[in-house]
Structure formats: structure tokens, C-alpha cells
Image (cartoon, rainbow over all chains, first blue to last red):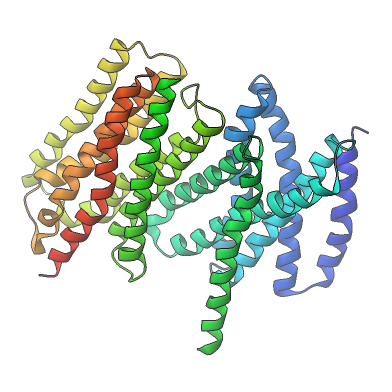
Length: 212
Length: 224
């Protein structure tokens, strides 16, 4: 069962790869970035295993300090590449950032599922589905939103990228700390609390755009 | 336990003040789009707010921020990086044309990083800070030093056209003291001196509240 993670990875990515070939333009970018999210998640799961050994298997420290950094950096790179090479328009960057975050979160849940297959419940699935996957998506969307802004202002670019990664890592770290603590509920609610303002903001943004 | 409570109080106060400063900056400099300089300083305060938020949650859930590197430190580094970038990238070229007549204004400001480095090394020696904690403190001192160089430079630099530098002197003074507090804070955190951390935290909170309004006041005079 050692390769269960890879088996799941192939089962998930193979049909998506076949689908992406049939799609065009924005749909292709969207599904493509979801696949990239899954690949990034697989890559990070291996990196995290190495990091855990480096830090004497201190899981609490690694999950609240090191993995938020490594995961946010890996997730930000494809979004940064898209903004630099394809388009830095908010309408295009935000959806692909969200797709990447969802893909990442989805596969991370699968990796954790394989490690705890005997202990998981429907409640666990609901909590992880609506919190962890959403948290990854919110972090990546925030980075994507920021990149659209700083890309246009050269003087802000380097510091801005650092600040975005810092903020995303801190948000991720806070989430990880909360879900491992006695304040679990707060941890599970946090992504929803940050998702709702983004949703409202996007709603009014498109409404204003349609009116113009 | 008492030390950690003092750390927590200091962090909560700093976090709240930084958040207030950050929101004020967003309203003043981002909604009506203003100079990148002001936006960078707002983001500097924002980085600090996020870093403190992390430390507050860490203290509440795990009860310690002194063990080794933690993400709250990135908030401090980000904050100092933005202060440096604002002056170096957005303001310095307006004031300093690189001519020889300003050479002494380029040399004297080295006093600020020198003082910060000396303060850090003396306290680190006296309070016996070594290993990873020493390196983390040294990294923060390095970022504080580069920010402080430009803060002092713009504090003593003769005024250029439109009074751009002169109007921002109060801000540069505040930012200079802020850099010093960042260095002192990390020293006292590593030496687990709760009272000193609380005092530094209160001073830092006041500075974080004052930074953005001082920039706003300075920028208002630009147009006069």
C-alpha cells in the first residue's frame, strides 16, 4: 500500500489530462491549473516528509512553521509564472489561482486520507473539504490578487512578492495551529470567514463591470 | 508562565495598533490611489500586524514564541524590508542626485546601522544569546540596519525641490526609532525578559499607530 498516494494521483490526474486536451482557452487554463495544483501537492507531500525528518519528526513545529512556508511558495510559483507570461489581468489570474488552490487542497486531503484511512468519518470529510481545501484556495487567490496589483508597480514587485508569501504563510500557519489546538472550531471556520468577503467582493466587481 | 503572559499582552497590543494603522493606510492610500511610497509604508505596517497575529495565536495555542524560528519573525522582516524599499526605491533618487556635494550625507547615516549592530551585539553578549536565536536576531538587525540607514539619511538630508524630504522628517524619525525597537524586542524575547518586551511592545505600538498618519501629514504638505 506504499504507493497508494501515487495510485490516487494517477486516478485523479489521468482523466483530467485527457479532458484538458479537449478544452480551449480559459477552460483549459482552469483545468490545467487544477492539475498543476494536484502535482504541486504531490511534490510538497514528498518535500514535507523530508522536512519532517530534518526537524526530528517534530510534527507540531513543522506543520505550523515550515510546511506553511514550503506549501505557499510552491503554490505561488505557477501563479507568478502565469501573471508574468500569460496575463496579469485580475479576471484571468483569480480563477486559475483558485483552481490551483482547490486542486492542491483536494489532493492534500487524499494524502491525509490514505494515512488515516481507518479513522476518517463523514464529519472529517466535511470539515476538511470545507476548511483545508478552501484555505488553500483562499491563500492562493490572495497571492494571485496581490500579484495582479504588484506586477503593475515595478517598485513594489520584490518586496510585494515577499510580503504576499509572508501573509499567505502566516494565514496558513494560523489555520494549522488552530486546527491542532483546543480552538479547532475557529480553525474550521476561518477559511469560510475569509472566503465570504472574497465572494462578495467578486460579486460586486463583476456587477460593476457589467454595468460599465 | 508570567513571562509568556507579558509576551501575549505585548503582542496583542502591537497587533491591534498595527491593524489600526494598516486599515487607516488602506483607506487613505489605496482607496484613492496615492504614491507607491505611502502604499509601501502601509504594507510595512500590515506585515507587522499579520506577524503579530501569528504570534498571538501561537502563544494562545502552543504557549511559546522563543524556541526557534517562527513565522511571526517574517512579519518583522517584511515590515523592515518595506521601510527600506520605500526610501531606497521610491524616495532616495528624488533627493540624492549622486553628486559629490552630498557625500557627507551619504557617510553620516552609516551611524544608524552601526549603532543598531552595536546595540544588538552588546545586548546579545550581556544576555548570553547564542545559536539559532543569535542568528535570527542578527538577520532582523541586518534588515533594521538597512532601513535605518535611509531613515537617518532622509532625516539629515538638505531639502530638495518641493520640500519632499523635509515634510517626511517626522516619519523618518519614527521609522528610525521603530527599527531600533525591532532589534531591542528580539533581544529581550530571546532573553525571556517579559517586562522589557512589554515596554518595547508598548513603544512599538505607539510608533505603528503614528507611522501612517505621519506619512499622510507629510504628503499633504507636498502639494502646498
